[in-house]
Amino acid sequence: MTTYNLRLKAKSELTPHPTAQYWRKCQVEELFAMPFMELVFKAAQVHRENFDPQAIQLSTLLSIKTGGCPEECEYCPQSARYDTSLEKQVMMDVEEIIEKAKIAKARGASRFCMGAAWRGPKPKDIKAVSNIISEVKSLGLETCGTFGLLEEGMAEDLKKAGLDYYNHNLDTDPERYNKIVHTRNHDDRMDTLGKVRHAGLKVCCGGIVGMNETRSERAGLIASLANLDPQPESVPINQLIKVEGTPLENAEDLDWTEFVRTIAVARITMPKSYVRLSAGRTAMPEAMQTLCFMAGANSIFYGEKLLTTCNPGEDSDRLLMDKLDLYPLSYEPSEV
Image (cartoon, rainbow, N blue to C red; front, side, top):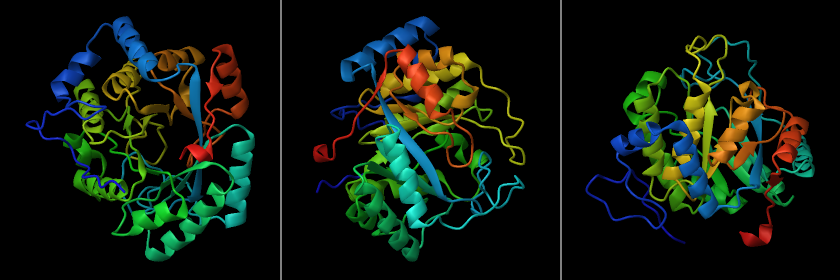
C-alpha cells in the first residue's frame, strides 16, 4: 500500500505532482479575474481533456446520525451551540440505512455517502459504522463517509470495512478558518486527511462559498485544495445554505457568476478531480447549473435531501440532465 504524506506543498517544493502543480494564491486570483466567458471556456477545455463532458457522477448523501454536534461552525445547523430547531437524533438503524441505499442505487446513484454529526467518532462508533459500510458496499455501491476528526487506526478500520472515500472539507481559506470554525483549527483537518491517505482511502475534500468571504479568500480556499498532495479525487463546492439560528443566517448573497467562477477555477487547478455541485442547488436556476457543468462540474448530490437541508428531487435532476444530454456515470465494483 502506498503511504502518502498529505500536506500543503511549501513554496520551495515546486516539483510538479503527476496531476498537479503548486498554485500560489495570487495565481488563483488571476484565474478568478479572467473575463467570465474566457474563464468558462478555458475550464471547459481542461474538462474535456480529462473527462467525458457528458458523464455526471451521482452521489446520494444520508445523515445517519443528526444534530447535537459539539463543534461550533458558523455555517452548520447541526451544532448543539445554535438554536436552529433541528432535533437531535440517534444513529439510524442499519436496516433503514440499507433500505435508503437500495433506493439510491435504484434511482441511479453510484456512490452512497453517509454523515454523522460528531466532532470525531469513538471506537464504538467506528465499529457500528464499519458494519454499515460493509452492508452498503455489498449492494454494489461506492461508499463515502464523513464522521469528523479521526484517531490513529480508525481510517484503516474504515478502509477494511469497504469505505472508498472519506469526506473532510477544508471549508474556507486557511487564513480565515478560525473566523468561521471556533472549536478546531486547519491543522486538525490536515491531520485527519493525512490519516485518510495513509490508510489508502480516496479523499473527498472541498469547501463552502458565500460565507461573506472575499474573492481573494475564495482563491485561498481553492489554492489550499489544489495544493493538497495528492489532490482530492472528489471536490464538493457548496454554496452556503443560510439556516435561521446560525451566525451566518444573514450572510450576503453570493452573485451567481462568482459561484460559476469558483467551479471553473476549481476545474482548472484540479483537472483530474471530480468537481461536485453540492449544497445550495435548490437556489440555482437550471441555466446557472448548466454553466457550472460547462465550466467543469461533473458530479452532483442526487436525492431530495442532503444532511439536513433540501436538495432538488431526482425527477428534476433527471429532467435537466435529459435537456443537456448528460448521463449518469456508472460504477463497476470490479474497477476498484
